[in-house]
Image (cartoon, rainbow, N blue to C red; front, side):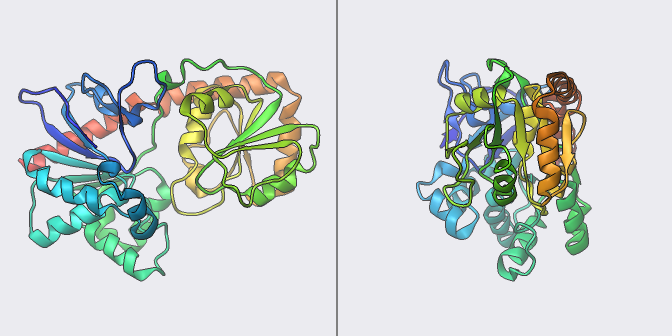
Length: 360
């Protein structure tokens, strides 16, 4: 779907290509700020800029077969084709994720078109860090060379790029993602009688199951979990998918948030970690590369693939209300100071301003 901003005048015109579906704003409906387009056109992080640009949004669901593209191609041709036909009318294209950038950048490179410049945010690690899959890895690398600027939200992904594609890494940088605290403001924060684990991206279900088998009288809720590979125990409730408002309510009411994230080079688990911290929840998280840049005060680090370490952490904080409260207060402060949406927006504003100046 193409969402058009009513803002006009001499403001920069930006075409934003997210790799998710963006919905029209519905009054009273709780969603994350990137997921809906407000009627005043002040979309997502761009509304925090000193001078709000005109941002039109062409999401990944702009073509009806986008789910098939995601499953088989791993990037979006339909979105790119529509963007290619429109991008001459914009000063800059901002693509979130290599999925939404590869086909467009490849077409621009073949056509030798240098306008408009394209910024790629959350570029990942060039095919999930699998250089052995040569066809998709090299095609992604080839296309991204056309980008004016690249942003990584995991320093491990940037380091991989520095090793295998240094010429691209010199035109990019790492900085952390940010969460919008007002999205969480309506949740009732409580100290419930359950722990929660959230994740559609990879989680270490096997070691979580082994850990929770040691706590038969403590409840665990899994939100967004697949139907296979998750713990199947009487004290474990599996919720494959819930609306955003319910998800935030469950997260806010948990006694502990547990994120057993496996190691790797891709970016996963970051938003759940930041949202839990923004709600002031104590988080037990594995100390691995995808989230290491985000683990700070308010988090309890545990070793990956270590059931004993995870068991000790759960046992240590389950009964200690004062320790949980201290961790949660520290977590909320860290989010406000370092990992908020306005902080992230200021960094992007500098990149966009510099890119537009170079283009002119």
